[in-house]
Length: 182
Image (tube, rainbow, N blue to C red; front, side, top):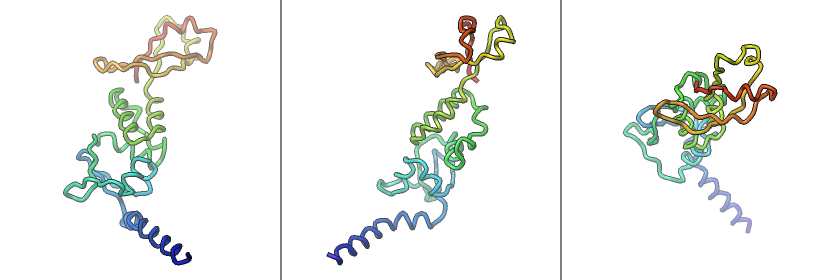
């Protein structure tokens, strides 16, 4: 019985060896749709998607340089990698992306199973513009709470569904708000 337990332990260690060797080799090289990135395995493993990729449970296609090839658009992957490295602080610059690019980044976050990243980008999607007939004094103290509705690619605009306001007295006046994307 003791020999079987030792044998099982040795087999378990042997099964784990590819992951240990992979981690010891250094950075993981990725080819994301032709854009090249390198990152520590520990950084990538913060995503369940990459955890599965690096576990070698499935065969991963390699490009001619030996990098792991992922058939996705690499345009926004730097934001994904920075998010894995630094959390929300790694999203500097996302605010300047067009609404369409933010939508693409959200789709990539979905693909890599990064719900928190998607929520962070979604928070940066909307700005409220008050019409000229709303008094400055009341507008400066009124903040809308809204969620994303439909996206209209032709005009690069989002429909926003206002769910509430921080100052309910001004609800009727604020209903005339025009919402626009950032």
